[in-house]
Length: 476
Image 1 (spheres, rainbow, N blue to C red):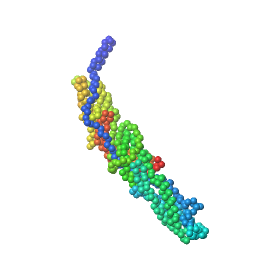
Image 2: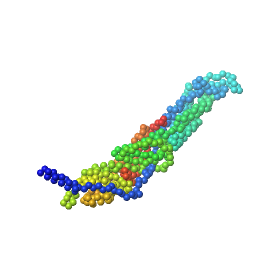
Image 3: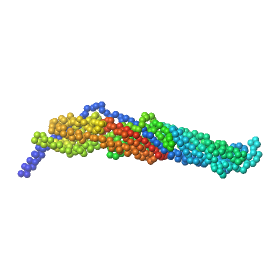
Image 4: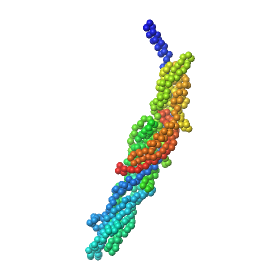
């Protein structure tokens, strides 16, 4: 009896296997078209940069001496003629700087005191001894003089900020009359001071008259080249290509630079590698306010497939085929591209029959509603043939309609979230002392490219961005 039951069970199992079909159609072979991903256009970003000049002023304050004296002071004398000699001490007050356009004015008030004496001379020979020293600015307030330098600046293509420094004539505010004959020796003091100021001018030209800003621009370039996590939306990489300065001018305590940047920004689900490169010399670019970014979002098919699988895996469909009930169970869904306008949807299934079938459809974006969906979904020709031969009951719109519902994405929330997340990235400290401030005004999708390895969604973002430099390390 047991042997008969076992034989009956084996027969029944074999019967079921013989009724269950394994469907394995070929992968779709889509007709080649002229479809291709055009090169991502340059995104032009115009960034007004405000640089606080106080650190530069502090550098000048630190580098320029605060005390000037006549040679070998206090023991040595300056003797411009046989009958006169003097020695002086000069101290400067704090630097005052004013900026306007491309000119920087550096000035200070100086305070000096002088000791002098005289003697009688005939034909260049002394005939009397020196008088007792007379003093000016020692027992009464020091004498004052205004000193100033004019600087014109040019930012060269190799990032050198070149300052041309010109010393103005010192302007004495107080005369210095020494006791011998009430002689005014202010001019002599001014002449000696000018020699000292010319030395100071040379020091300033060596110190900051030709400042190399390439290290600071390299830091900015490196920051722009990095990949930034925009939270759950992927990684943003700007891929800077060119840089230039549209305009350079100074006002009050700030230097304003209108910086132009050409870039090819990309967003991807996987973190891209960061390749460091040397910041190129400045070149020519167009001029416009704010920025217009063409952005390629690279969406990996595996990631998209996972989103769809969350809704479709193990979903069952029951069909009545006459008196026989049929079952269709989705086991896995995979999206892929074929290098033309269509997406291929591969479905592995089980149930009454098992195997694989392929659907194809065209991704379409409606900008008025911000809806991205796959339209015109249908069975591929190879799958049609396989189903008609072995499982005609599967040739049913119910499956297509369910898949179509799960390949329809409302991007309104995504776009709003993208604006919030990108705006957070635009408003932050880039490096110590350097911060950015900006906003995204609009994001528009302008193209969808179902390539072989990924779905590329091209968008255009517009907005404004500014950078403020509160401190800068000129020692780099």
